[in-house]
Image 1 (spheres, rainbow, N blue to C red):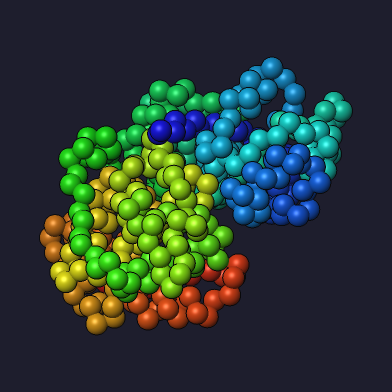
Image 2 (spheres, rainbow, N blue to C red):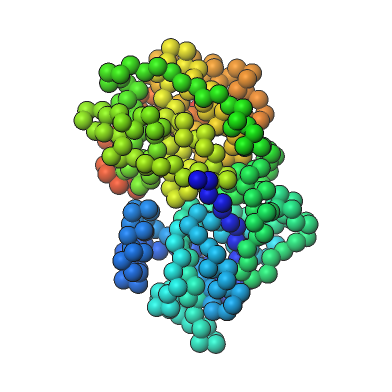
Length: 373
């Protein structure tokens, strides 16, 4: 089932208290260990299982019928955009909401009315941005001079139009911030037109299986969830059965196309894609690049990194394919967004990086990968 994602505006109008709260629980994320005593057992289970006990940004709203109504409509995976002085300054994904006075007082104390910001939401996949709202408004169907008031939800029809035509909010904001043109795409139509590329892999353990397993294990060490295609989940390498370590279901959403399910290895956190890997073990080194090209065609505004993983001797072949006119065009820009990771690099990372190493993430892989430009 495809998830519908909502988008909420939060106005952080400024002032000493607001600035301090913003610093304390958004700029400085909070560790689960310091606040776990404020949660129910079911809430702790969600945070530890779904988010691996990682750090969170937190914000809240004071009591009131409007605030309570919007907070009640929030769900995990929804987006929050924080607005101040004509600009979007922060964007994130909802992980958990909790009506919790004690936690609110611990975070922010009480205001001059004796109230606290007890309608709390924890956020992951956070992005500090600096985007004039006037740049985002046209993609939401608002006039250029529109601005939000307080805590509110964007009309769902407008949210669906943005997410369905341009992709995830975090990527759109990043592209607006850098001045890149935002591409429009009809995801449903394009998915129907795509032919799934398959290749026959030997049923004995191969380097393809080995690389899949090592990328699974590296993803778990990076504290993310890992997905591999359903047909690969029964595979194993050196006794490690893939399905015991990966997501059993891929939660697609209006801005995350189901086509992602076909990629060899996908790293996820919450509802957001963190990285995608194609292991190029075929003779032509073409099929993996084509799958990434198809994914890129569906999500041209996405900013998560893509990687081709192949034997080092085939790097030049991979790069020459990426330079082909079908891939090297202003829409796909594959040679700009695809990095190359050799088998020996993946083995090196897997054998040298310890479990739960804070330095292991997609930024680390980007720095270690080789690029055409």
